[in-house]
Structures are given as C-alpha cells and as structure tokens.
Length: 402
Image (cartoon, rainbow, N blue to C red):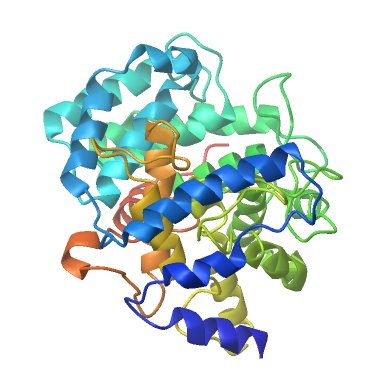
C-alpha cells in the first residue's frame, strides 16, 4: 500500500508541487528550539521564497559548461585547501561536463592524462597531487577521470600491476581497506578499491575475501551504513556500502527493508532534496549519495522477482525541482542549498543526482525535456554508461597481475 502510493505520486510526469501544499510540511519543532531547528527554519524560508516565484525549472546548461571548463583551466584561491585532492577536481569537472553532454577535445584531454600520470606513485596508486603519497580516494578519482577521457593514452597510463599491489598492501584480514598506508580505515576504502578493481579488471576473490561481512557489520539499526561498524548511518557511507555489496555480488546480505525505510525518510518533504543524516539539513550533493541507492535497490528487488513499478521509490520530480529551482547559481555551477557558494563538488553530485532522478525505467523529466534532460549514468560507479562500457571492455582483455 505504502509503495503503491509513492509510485502513483511520482508517476505524474512533468507535475510540480503547489506552493500552498508545501506550507503544510514546514518544520514543527514542538516548541523545543535547537541550533538545527533554527537553521532548518532559515533553509525553509529561503526555499519557499524560490518556490513561490513559480519559475519554470530550466537547466542552465551553457553556464554550467562554461563554469566547469574555466574550473579545469584555473581554480580560484578558495580551492587552495584542496591541493591534496587534485585528481578529484579533474573528476568532478570532467564527470559533470559529460553529464551535460560535453566532451573535451583531444589536446585538452591529453593534458589531463599527463597531469594525472604525475600524480601516480611509482609503486602503484594515485596521490592527491604530484609527489604525494598514494591514497585510495584519489586513486578512484584519477581512474574515473581517465575512464571519462576514454583514450588509449588514458587507459595505458594506469600502472595496473602497481595498482594491484597497492590494493594488497591496504587490505586487512577482516576484508576492510585502509585509505592509505598506515592511514584511516572506513567503508570508502572498500568502495574505492572494489570499484577501481572492477573497472580495470583487477578484481580477484582473494583480494576481497571477507569484505562483504565487514560491510554488513557497518549497517546500523537505522538501516543506513556507517563509515565503520557501530558508527552513525550516513548517506555517502550508505552508497559506498550498498554499491560495494552489489559489485561483490553479495547484495543479499543487506537488510533491505530497514535500508529502504531509512533512505526514503532522508528526502526532505518541503525542499525535495536529500539530507545526509537524520536531523540534518538538505544538501544538493546527497541528490546522488542518497538518490543513487534507489536504482540499485530497484535492481535487487527485480532480481528477487518482487513486484516493481517503472519509477524509483522516491519523489523524482521533487528532487529535480529542488536542484533546478534552488541549487543553480545564476552564473553557472550548482550549490549545496540556497545561500551557499557554488563549487565543482556540488556541481558534480547535484548533476549526478539530476541524472538519477530522470532515468528511471520510465523517464521522468520535469520542465521541457529538450532543455533539461541530461546523460544517464551508471549508478555503481557514478560514470556515464559509455565510460564504464569502454573502460571495462578495454581492460578485460588484459591479464590480472600475479
């Protein structure tokens, strides 16, 4: 009954929520004011003002493309703190451009390949910049960026033998992975390792022995996944946990009912976007981190021969409204929420969430389809379908190192 009511609601293609109906779902703090309730009230006021204007939601594609291309060429001083995340800056910009249907020319792509090669450690793995220690997160970002470029130069720049040894060095006996040598351990490491291993044909059962058990220990009483066993459920960690189980072929070990209950309750009723944790504010980046779990759940339920409709089990239209009405900067780029600054991180994951929300089995695109539709992505990797297909086809003919 509950599932059918959601399906009926989200199946109304091109529908928009009426401003008057949103007033009924504003926060009720039950006369107990907290720091969070004060901030929530401010967000709701800003969002309601934007929805009240009743502008047609239109994706400002050309402005976003200009912002992203400028970011690839010259980053402002505000990004100085991300000097150890430079492969991420490449990935965020390249992926967002690809979602928008934009590809760099061969000369620009080759420059990025050469730069990322300088970030690669001689013994395997990629660091956050030239000369920096290799790290699983920056390795994932670099391999994804090279997969987006799709050239033989990009593929061949990856030292697969060194990469496999790098994974072996970071693996723990319980199946978990350190983020870097003698570094922190959390569920991001598992996801980065298995996603890159699958993309580059480095996956072996030995490398991921016991990993599925460690992941399931990270699922919390709420239903989402924490960064480690006994930690709080979080949207990014939940995506990493669920996607990793699917990639490992062990999705049956996830407690799906509690996960689904937790996920649907992370979509905020007034804003339409997702929050990352219970009792937190909406954030545009969780459009992907939370939203991308729904296609995975859809696939799991379909494989179990359980009844499924043609839409994801969240309000896809409401999410698109939040992203297109509340999160677009007038000069290009997307935001966390109204009042925040634009940046390439939120631009990437907001557009990824937009893609997820549009590409259910029966497409649901609010506004004018020719203006607002974006490229579909592979929810297990957050890459375009073409990028995943070309990379896996290229590397599958190469041997797995000893």
